[in-house]
Length: 467
Image (cartoon, rainbow, N blue to C red; front, side, top):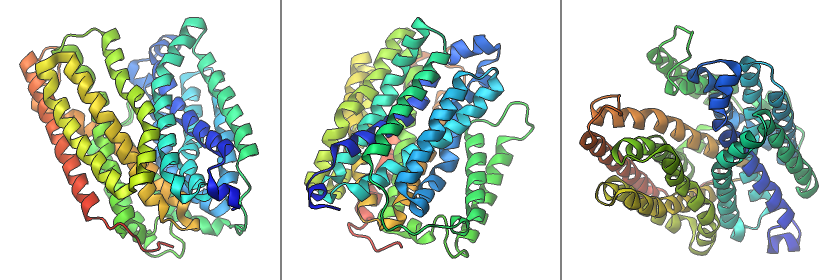
C-alpha cells in the first residue's frame, strides 16, 4: 500500500464499500413494504408472501460465511464484483417475475449476492484502510446499513404511489449497477494472491453449514407451510448437522471455519456478543409494535413514525461511533456501548409505562447509538488482528452471528413476550398484562446484555494468530 493510502482512506473506496452495504440493506427493507400489494397481485396469503422477504434473509444467512471464504481464496475485489453482478441480474429477474414462486427464487439468488455485499466490505476495508481509520470505516458501514433500513420503506411507499411494485426491483437493479461500476473502478485489484482451486473450498463443511443454517432458519421461521416437518424435527436436525460440521472441520486440512477461530477469546467472544446484541435488536422491532398499538393505543401511522426513530438515530450515530472507536480503542468503546445498551433496555422496559410514547422515544434515542457503538467497536476488534488470508472468513462470521441473533430474537423474544403476557392474542389481552410482559421481556434483554458485557470484560485485548 502506498504512503498516500496509508495516510488516509481513499474516498472512492469508501463510497464503493458504503454503496455495497446500502444495496444489501435496501434489498431487505424495500421488499417488506411491498408485501400487501404482492398478496393482492399474486392472490396469495400473507404467510406465502412473507417468503419474498424470508427467502432473501435465509439466503444471506446460509451463504455469508462461504461468501467471505470465497473472497479469501479468490480475491475480495473479484468476488465483490461477482456478488454485484448476481445482485443486478437477480433484481432484474425479480422485476419481471411472472409468478410468486419465481419471485421467491430470484429473491433467494439476490440474497446470495447480498451475502457477498455484507461480508466483503469489512474485509476490503481491513485490506485498504489504514489501521487508525478502521473504526471510522466500520461506523460508516453501520451508518449506511441503518440508512438502507430506514430508507427502504419510504422508497417502497413512493414507488407504489407512482407505479407498481416492479419498479422497486428495477430501482434496486439500477442502484446495484451503479455500485458495480464504482467498485470496479475504485477498488484496486488483489495483489500477490495465489489462484485457489476447488479443493480449497472445503465443500463438505460448506454443504453441512448451509444445511444446518437452512434448517435453523426454517425452525425460527416456524417451518414451511405444506411441508409436514415440525419445528422440533427441524431443531433436532440443526443440532445433528452442526455436530457433523464440527467433526468435519476438525479433520479437514483447509476448514471453512477453523475451530481455533471460535476458541480465540476476541473472535469467539465477538461472535457470541454479536448474537446476543442481534437478539435484543430484533426484539425492539418485533415486540415494540404490539406495545405501542395495544398498550399505548397508537394507530398504525404513528407506530410507523415511532419505530422509524431507531433507524434514523442509527444512521446519524454510526460514523461518530466509529470515530470514538479509533480515538479510545475498540475494547473501551465496546464496554461503554454494552453498558449503555443495558441502561437503554431498562429505560425501554419502564419509561414508556410512566411517560407513554415520549418515554419510548427517549429510550430509543439512548439505546440505538449504543448498538452502533458496540457494532463499530466489535467489528474493529475482530477485524483489526485478522491475517490477510482470513479476513473474508471473519467478516462472514460477523455477518452470520448478527443474522443468527436477528433470527433468534424474532422467534425467542416473541415467544418470551407471549409467555409473560399469558396469551398469544395481544388484541384481547388486558393493557396491564401487555405492559407487564413488555417490561419483563426487555428486563430479560438487559440481562442478556449483562452477559455480553461480562464477555467483553473477559476477552483479551490482544489475540493470537488464527492462520
